[in-house]
Image (tube, rainbow, N blue to C red):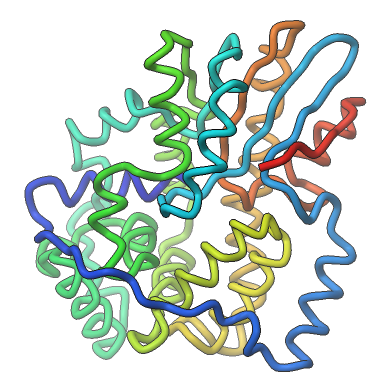
Length: 325
Protein backbone atom coordinates (compact mmCIF):
# COMPACT_ATOMS: atom_id res chain seq x y z
CA UNK A 1 0.00 0.00 0.00
CA UNK A 2 1.06 3.53 -0.59
CA UNK A 3 1.07 4.35 3.10
CA UNK A 4 4.87 4.44 2.82
CA UNK A 5 4.71 7.76 1.02
CA UNK A 6 2.22 9.19 3.49
CA UNK A 7 4.22 8.05 6.49
CA UNK A 8 7.45 9.37 5.07
CA UNK A 9 6.04 12.89 4.90
CA UNK A 10 7.00 12.80 8.57
CA UNK A 11 10.65 12.54 7.54
CA UNK A 12 10.75 15.83 5.60
CA UNK A 13 13.77 17.74 6.83
CA UNK A 14 14.33 15.30 9.70
CA UNK A 15 15.75 11.98 8.58
CA UNK A 16 19.45 11.79 7.92
CA UNK A 17 20.80 10.66 4.56
CA UNK A 18 20.76 6.87 4.60
CA UNK A 19 22.61 5.61 1.57
CA UNK A 20 24.14 2.26 2.46
CA UNK A 21 23.18 -0.40 -0.05
CA UNK A 22 20.83 -3.14 1.08
CA UNK A 23 22.56 -6.51 1.04
CA UNK A 24 19.82 -8.97 1.86
CA UNK A 25 19.22 -12.45 0.46
CA UNK A 26 15.98 -14.03 -0.69
CA UNK A 27 14.84 -16.25 2.18
CA UNK A 28 12.42 -18.40 0.18
CA UNK A 29 15.01 -21.11 -0.69
CA UNK A 30 15.73 -21.57 3.02
CA UNK A 31 12.14 -22.16 4.12
CA UNK A 32 11.43 -25.37 6.02
CA UNK A 33 9.50 -28.09 4.18
CA UNK A 34 6.46 -27.74 6.46
CA UNK A 35 6.37 -23.99 5.83
CA UNK A 36 6.59 -24.55 2.08
CA UNK A 37 3.72 -27.04 2.25
CA UNK A 38 1.61 -24.52 4.14
CA UNK A 39 2.40 -21.74 1.66
CA UNK A 40 1.73 -24.02 -1.32
CA UNK A 41 -1.69 -24.95 0.10
CA UNK A 42 -2.58 -21.27 0.55
CA UNK A 43 -1.49 -20.40 -2.98
CA UNK A 44 -3.41 -23.34 -4.48
CA UNK A 45 -6.62 -22.07 -2.87
CA UNK A 46 -6.09 -18.45 -3.97
CA UNK A 47 -7.73 -17.05 -7.13
CA UNK A 48 -5.30 -15.20 -9.39
CA UNK A 49 -2.22 -16.01 -7.28
CA UNK A 50 0.31 -14.78 -9.84
CA UNK A 51 0.81 -11.94 -12.29
CA UNK A 52 1.56 -8.23 -11.86
CA UNK A 53 -0.11 -6.89 -15.03
CA UNK A 54 -3.60 -7.72 -16.33
CA UNK A 55 -6.10 -6.64 -18.96
CA UNK A 56 -9.77 -6.75 -17.95
CA UNK A 57 -12.42 -6.52 -20.70
CA UNK A 58 -16.19 -6.43 -20.72
CA UNK A 59 -18.50 -5.24 -23.50
CA UNK A 60 -15.82 -3.01 -24.99
CA UNK A 61 -14.61 -1.57 -21.69
CA UNK A 62 -10.89 -2.06 -21.03
CA UNK A 63 -9.09 -1.78 -17.69
CA UNK A 64 -5.36 -2.41 -17.27
CA UNK A 65 -4.51 -3.42 -13.70
CA UNK A 66 -0.97 -3.21 -12.36
CA UNK A 67 0.20 -4.58 -9.03
CA UNK A 68 2.95 -2.30 -7.76
CA UNK A 69 5.71 -2.31 -5.21
CA UNK A 70 6.16 0.97 -3.38
CA UNK A 71 9.92 0.63 -3.68
CA UNK A 72 12.18 0.96 -6.66
CA UNK A 73 14.95 -1.38 -7.77
CA UNK A 74 17.10 -1.32 -10.92
CA UNK A 75 15.91 -4.85 -11.71
CA UNK A 76 12.44 -3.43 -12.29
CA UNK A 77 13.54 -0.93 -14.94
CA UNK A 78 12.80 -3.18 -17.98
CA UNK A 79 9.31 -3.95 -16.69
CA UNK A 80 8.57 -0.29 -15.99
CA UNK A 81 9.72 0.62 -19.51
CA UNK A 82 7.26 -1.94 -20.93
CA UNK A 83 4.43 -0.27 -19.03
CA UNK A 84 4.91 3.06 -20.78
CA UNK A 85 2.71 2.42 -23.87
CA UNK A 86 -0.19 1.24 -21.72
CA UNK A 87 0.09 4.23 -19.39
CA UNK A 88 0.48 6.76 -22.17
CA UNK A 89 -2.53 5.41 -24.07
CA UNK A 90 -4.79 5.47 -21.03
CA UNK A 91 -7.63 7.96 -20.60
CA UNK A 92 -7.11 8.00 -16.83
CA UNK A 93 -4.60 6.69 -14.31
CA UNK A 94 -5.90 5.50 -10.95
CA UNK A 95 -3.45 5.27 -8.04
CA UNK A 96 -4.11 4.36 -4.45
CA UNK A 97 -3.31 7.95 -3.53
CA UNK A 98 -1.99 10.53 -5.99
CA UNK A 99 0.96 12.77 -5.15
CA UNK A 100 -1.47 15.70 -4.98
CA UNK A 101 -3.45 13.92 -2.24
CA UNK A 102 -0.24 13.05 -0.41
CA UNK A 103 0.65 16.74 -0.33
CA UNK A 104 -2.33 17.29 1.97
CA UNK A 105 -0.56 15.27 4.66
CA UNK A 106 2.65 17.23 4.14
CA UNK A 107 0.86 20.49 4.91
CA UNK A 108 -0.68 19.13 8.10
CA UNK A 109 1.35 16.31 9.71
CA UNK A 110 -0.80 16.70 12.84
CA UNK A 111 -3.33 14.49 11.05
CA UNK A 112 -1.05 11.57 11.93
CA UNK A 113 -0.96 12.23 15.68
CA UNK A 114 -2.49 10.10 18.41
CA UNK A 115 -5.68 11.49 19.96
CA UNK A 116 -5.46 13.86 22.91
CA UNK A 117 -2.33 13.51 25.03
CA UNK A 118 -1.87 9.78 24.36
CA UNK A 119 1.72 8.65 23.82
CA UNK A 120 3.09 5.42 22.43
CA UNK A 121 5.17 4.57 25.52
CA UNK A 122 1.93 4.56 27.53
CA UNK A 123 0.47 1.94 25.17
CA UNK A 124 3.45 -0.43 25.12
CA UNK A 125 5.70 -2.29 27.49
CA UNK A 126 9.02 -0.68 28.29
CA UNK A 127 10.90 -3.29 26.24
CA UNK A 128 8.59 -2.82 23.25
CA UNK A 129 8.97 0.96 23.25
CA UNK A 130 12.76 0.66 23.66
CA UNK A 131 12.92 -1.56 20.56
CA UNK A 132 10.68 0.76 18.55
CA UNK A 133 12.60 3.87 19.64
CA UNK A 134 15.93 2.29 18.69
CA UNK A 135 14.62 1.26 15.27
CA UNK A 136 13.34 4.79 14.65
CA UNK A 137 16.65 6.30 15.74
CA UNK A 138 18.42 3.95 13.33
CA UNK A 139 16.29 5.50 10.57
CA UNK A 140 17.13 9.07 11.57
CA UNK A 141 13.76 9.73 13.19
CA UNK A 142 13.71 11.17 16.75
CA UNK A 143 11.85 8.80 19.04
CA UNK A 144 10.56 11.72 21.12
CA UNK A 145 8.61 13.02 18.13
CA UNK A 146 7.49 9.50 17.22
CA UNK A 147 5.97 8.99 20.65
CA UNK A 148 2.92 11.02 19.57
CA UNK A 149 2.38 9.47 16.12
CA UNK A 150 -0.27 6.88 15.29
CA UNK A 151 1.45 3.45 15.26
CA UNK A 152 -0.38 2.72 11.99
CA UNK A 153 1.92 5.18 10.20
CA UNK A 154 5.08 4.22 12.07
CA UNK A 155 4.55 0.61 10.99
CA UNK A 156 5.03 1.68 7.36
CA UNK A 157 8.33 3.31 8.26
CA UNK A 158 9.71 0.47 10.35
CA UNK A 159 8.84 -2.18 7.77
CA UNK A 160 11.58 -0.69 5.57
CA UNK A 161 15.21 -1.23 6.68
CA UNK A 162 17.38 1.90 7.00
CA UNK A 163 19.30 1.04 3.83
CA UNK A 164 16.17 1.52 1.70
CA UNK A 165 14.62 4.62 3.27
CA UNK A 166 16.45 7.15 1.12
CA UNK A 167 15.09 5.38 -1.94
CA UNK A 168 11.54 5.57 -0.62
CA UNK A 169 12.00 9.24 0.26
CA UNK A 170 13.12 9.85 -3.33
CA UNK A 171 9.73 8.46 -4.43
CA UNK A 172 11.23 5.87 -6.78
CA UNK A 173 8.56 3.22 -6.31
CA UNK A 174 6.77 1.59 -9.23
CA UNK A 175 3.58 3.57 -8.65
CA UNK A 176 5.50 6.85 -8.45
CA UNK A 177 7.23 6.14 -11.74
CA UNK A 178 3.93 5.25 -13.42
CA UNK A 179 2.42 8.50 -12.14
CA UNK A 180 5.38 10.45 -13.54
CA UNK A 181 4.78 8.86 -16.97
CA UNK A 182 1.15 9.95 -16.92
CA UNK A 183 1.94 13.47 -15.76
CA UNK A 184 4.53 13.90 -18.49
CA UNK A 185 1.85 13.11 -21.10
CA UNK A 186 -0.85 15.18 -19.45
CA UNK A 187 -2.97 12.12 -18.60
CA UNK A 188 -5.38 12.78 -15.72
CA UNK A 189 -4.71 10.97 -12.46
CA UNK A 190 -7.15 10.11 -9.69
CA UNK A 191 -6.99 8.52 -6.24
CA UNK A 192 -8.79 5.30 -5.44
CA UNK A 193 -9.31 6.72 -1.96
CA UNK A 194 -9.05 10.14 -0.36
CA UNK A 195 -6.90 11.24 2.54
CA UNK A 196 -10.08 11.60 4.60
CA UNK A 197 -10.93 7.96 3.88
CA UNK A 198 -7.45 6.85 4.90
CA UNK A 199 -7.70 8.84 8.12
CA UNK A 200 -11.09 7.24 8.73
CA UNK A 201 -9.46 3.82 8.42
CA UNK A 202 -6.93 4.89 11.04
CA UNK A 203 -9.57 6.35 13.36
CA UNK A 204 -11.48 3.06 13.22
CA UNK A 205 -8.32 0.98 13.68
CA UNK A 206 -8.17 0.00 17.38
CA UNK A 207 -4.98 1.22 19.00
CA UNK A 208 -4.15 -2.21 20.39
CA UNK A 209 -4.32 -3.63 16.87
CA UNK A 210 -2.19 -0.76 15.57
CA UNK A 211 0.41 -1.61 18.21
CA UNK A 212 0.41 -5.25 17.07
CA UNK A 213 0.81 -4.09 13.48
CA UNK A 214 3.72 -1.86 14.53
CA UNK A 215 5.47 -4.67 16.37
CA UNK A 216 4.83 -7.01 13.46
CA UNK A 217 6.66 -4.60 11.15
CA UNK A 218 9.72 -4.49 13.37
CA UNK A 219 12.01 -7.24 12.09
CA UNK A 220 15.17 -8.38 13.81
CA UNK A 221 18.08 -6.27 12.53
CA UNK A 222 20.00 -9.36 11.41
CA UNK A 223 17.33 -10.31 8.84
CA UNK A 224 15.63 -6.99 8.02
CA UNK A 225 17.51 -6.71 4.71
CA UNK A 226 16.67 -10.35 3.93
CA UNK A 227 12.96 -9.68 4.44
CA UNK A 228 13.13 -6.75 2.03
CA UNK A 229 14.99 -8.78 -0.61
CA UNK A 230 12.47 -11.62 -0.22
CA UNK A 231 9.64 -9.17 -0.91
CA UNK A 232 11.39 -7.66 -3.94
CA UNK A 233 12.38 -11.05 -5.38
CA UNK A 234 8.81 -12.31 -4.97
CA UNK A 235 7.48 -9.24 -6.73
CA UNK A 236 9.87 -9.67 -9.64
CA UNK A 237 8.74 -13.30 -9.88
CA UNK A 238 5.11 -12.07 -9.90
CA UNK A 239 4.18 -14.58 -7.19
CA UNK A 240 1.93 -12.27 -5.20
CA UNK A 241 -0.11 -14.80 -3.20
CA UNK A 242 3.07 -16.75 -2.44
CA UNK A 243 4.79 -13.52 -1.38
CA UNK A 244 2.01 -12.54 1.02
CA UNK A 245 1.95 -16.01 2.58
CA UNK A 246 5.76 -16.25 2.84
CA UNK A 247 6.19 -12.81 4.42
CA UNK A 248 3.41 -13.61 6.84
CA UNK A 249 5.04 -16.90 7.86
CA UNK A 250 8.47 -15.32 8.22
CA UNK A 251 7.06 -12.44 10.26
CA UNK A 252 5.76 -14.90 12.82
CA UNK A 253 9.33 -15.55 14.00
CA UNK A 254 11.24 -12.60 12.55
CA UNK A 255 9.31 -9.74 14.15
CA UNK A 256 8.27 -8.60 17.62
CA UNK A 257 4.65 -9.20 16.62
CA UNK A 258 4.71 -12.97 16.88
CA UNK A 259 2.89 -14.97 19.52
CA UNK A 260 -0.26 -17.03 20.01
CA UNK A 261 -2.56 -14.30 18.60
CA UNK A 262 -0.47 -13.74 15.48
CA UNK A 263 -2.86 -15.31 12.96
CA UNK A 264 -5.95 -13.63 14.41
CA UNK A 265 -4.20 -10.26 14.29
CA UNK A 266 -2.96 -10.78 10.74
CA UNK A 267 -6.42 -11.82 9.56
CA UNK A 268 -7.89 -8.66 11.06
CA UNK A 269 -5.23 -6.45 9.48
CA UNK A 270 -5.78 -8.12 6.10
CA UNK A 271 -9.54 -7.58 6.38
CA UNK A 272 -9.11 -3.88 7.17
CA UNK A 273 -6.24 -2.95 4.87
CA UNK A 274 -6.83 -5.21 1.86
CA UNK A 275 -10.33 -6.68 1.67
CA UNK A 276 -12.31 -3.65 2.80
CA UNK A 277 -10.38 -1.26 0.58
CA UNK A 278 -10.63 -3.54 -2.47
CA UNK A 279 -14.42 -3.48 -2.19
CA UNK A 280 -14.33 0.29 -1.71
CA UNK A 281 -12.22 0.81 -4.81
CA UNK A 282 -14.08 -1.45 -7.22
CA UNK A 283 -17.15 0.77 -7.87
CA UNK A 284 -14.86 3.73 -8.53
CA UNK A 285 -12.89 1.74 -11.07
CA UNK A 286 -16.00 0.41 -12.78
CA UNK A 287 -17.56 3.89 -12.97
CA UNK A 288 -14.65 5.08 -15.14
CA UNK A 289 -14.36 1.99 -17.38
CA UNK A 290 -15.09 2.50 -21.06
CA UNK A 291 -13.84 1.86 -24.59
CA UNK A 292 -10.73 3.96 -24.05
CA UNK A 293 -8.60 2.02 -21.57
CA UNK A 294 -8.00 3.20 -18.04
CA UNK A 295 -4.93 2.16 -16.07
CA UNK A 296 -5.15 1.20 -12.40
CA UNK A 297 -2.03 0.85 -10.23
CA UNK A 298 -2.22 -0.53 -6.69
CA UNK A 299 -0.05 -2.53 -4.31
CA UNK A 300 0.46 -6.06 -5.62
CA UNK A 301 -1.07 -7.55 -2.46
CA UNK A 302 -4.45 -6.15 -3.57
CA UNK A 303 -4.55 -8.34 -6.71
CA UNK A 304 -4.84 -12.00 -5.59
CA UNK A 305 -7.50 -13.74 -3.54
CA UNK A 306 -11.24 -14.22 -3.34
CA UNK A 307 -11.59 -10.56 -2.36
CA UNK A 308 -8.69 -9.42 -4.54
CA UNK A 309 -9.35 -6.80 -7.19
CA UNK A 310 -8.85 -9.29 -10.04
CA UNK A 311 -11.43 -11.74 -8.72
CA UNK A 312 -13.84 -8.90 -7.96
CA UNK A 313 -13.56 -7.80 -11.60
CA UNK A 314 -14.12 -11.37 -12.76
CA UNK A 315 -17.24 -11.52 -10.59
CA UNK A 316 -18.50 -8.44 -12.44
CA UNK A 317 -18.21 -10.30 -15.74
CA UNK A 318 -14.82 -9.01 -16.86
CA UNK A 319 -12.54 -11.37 -18.80
CA UNK A 320 -9.03 -11.27 -17.33
CA UNK A 321 -5.89 -11.74 -19.42
CA UNK A 322 -2.44 -11.79 -17.88
CA UNK A 323 0.05 -9.57 -19.73
CA UNK A 324 3.86 -9.76 -19.82
CA UNK A 325 5.42 -7.70 -17.04
